[in-house]
Image (cartoon, rainbow, N blue to C red; front, side, top):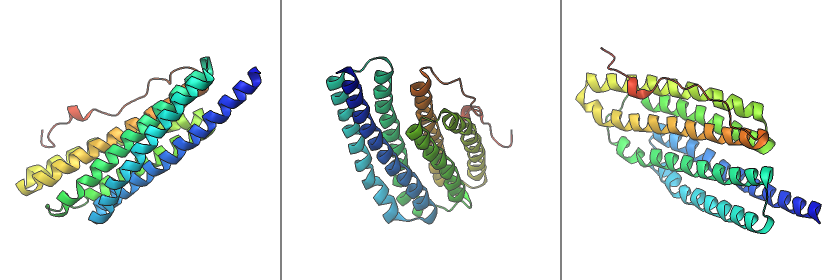
Length: 235
């Protein structure tokens, strides 16, 4: 009887894991499309990202309901319980990633009519691509419980931090050069910070993979310089 119960749990958990991976695919698309809409000044694509966030939110609610039902029916213990809880946490991280992509898309209509900052949107799209690749690899690590790949994802977060710092300095310079650059540059600063936060969330997801696979917390990760320490380029 016990092997049957364990098999049923594994089957149910695998179905939930597939739901998480599907949700992750929607989030990947949202990040890519939001960055593209920003660079190409495509208001329609930005609106699609905002609207598509409802699908991501609904997916998280469904996954949470599936996990609660699984816990009630199967009453897992030890490793199985850890896996079930990690799946729920993963869905939460993905939902927040979707929110950040939506927030990026919401700034597109404002920036379309603002002063153009040369190179800004291209740089932010490159930053988004880096986070998007981290997300793709994190989901692959989750699908295979690949801790080596998960650790590789974690190690890349410092590159996102450093890129954010470089962008902050660039936008501060633009604001100092011309007051007309202040409004768009502030929007770009918020977007860059949101993308940095996306990298943190993806890193948390990779840490969940390590926790499930190894039963212990991931090693403390190195972070880039905090944006709070950035000074004026002329200082």
